[in-house]
Image (cartoon, rainbow, N blue to C red; front, side, top):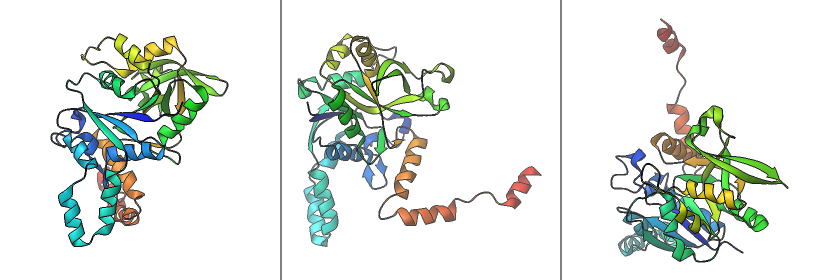
Length: 298
């Protein structure tokens, strides 16, 4: 069965990016000339999904406004004769059939996905998190969709990280069966020495409707939140779940350093400013001079 619908979890506070996210949703933080969430929606559309439900929260109205039509801006652009930017805005406004549902209480990623049950209905669907951007030839979610078409079971996107990084992610334990990677377990933020692998989950999933039954069975964590990973753990014990190692460059925007690194990476490949920005970095980011090195030794 084809994947026709997607859910984007976008209700979190973005506390690791304060104070920038006090009034601006973290999903709307600009990565060069687009907000982060636009890259995610463009990924979905490129993969053939245009029925998108965004789970939002308090203070997230800017997301809706971004993908809605702004009559005043359109009028101003027409008066200036800026047809290029007008075309750009119209393309954004017509990207997909986007729906919004508010998570009134921030009770975790599991609770956010559960709220999508009525919209999804009885068909497989994609789930994406707004912190993760993937640059790839084939859209990241499209790679998972290809695997789902072959295996007919839930698919988790994974990517290799260094042993030093595994403590920041959910890490899978898996085994290879007939060329596919069957997930046998999922460990949240393990100590490097105890990590079952270096394959970390990134924010892309394909689920079937039974995920909602598993979400209804989990207990809240100590934080009071219902975690999607807990429901996945239950699902692994009951049915086959597979991992899809993603081909592409994984970027995150959930904390300040990652956000800056992602912005620089995207700026360097931007079709308009990329080359100029590269030259700027060459001029401003210089290795320490030999004199400075000698003075530090002294």
